[in-house]
Amino acid sequence: QVQLVESGGGLVQPGGSLSLSCAASKSIFSMYSMGWYRQAPGKQRELVAERTRSDSTNYADSVKGRFTISRDSAGNTVYLQMNSLKPEDTAVYYCNQKSLTLFNYWGQGTQVTVSS
Image: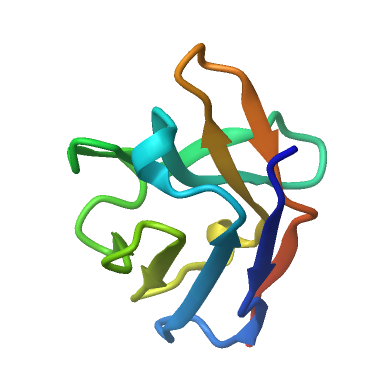
C-alpha cells in the first residue's frame, strides 16, 4: 500500500510564495509518476503538475511559469514551489502517485488559501 504524506499548505497573500512537500512510501522510480492535483470548492479535481519517472514534467497552463515541481535524489519526496500565487490558486492540494499500471494513489490533501 502506497502512503503519501503532504505538508506545507497554509494562508498566503496574493503574489506570495508557498512550498508543498509530499513524502511517499514508494520511490517515483518504481512508479509511473508523482505529482500534484488540486480541487477548489464546487470544482473538479485538476492536474497542477506532475513528474514522471523519466523526469519529464507536465504543468497545467494556469500555473506554467509560476509553479515548479521537483524531487529529491531518492525519488521519495516531491516538492511544489508555488510563486506569484493568485486567489484562484486557492484549493485543497493533493499529492498523487500513479503506478506503472496507472492506478492512482492519493494523499490526504493540504489546504492552500490565497487571500489578503
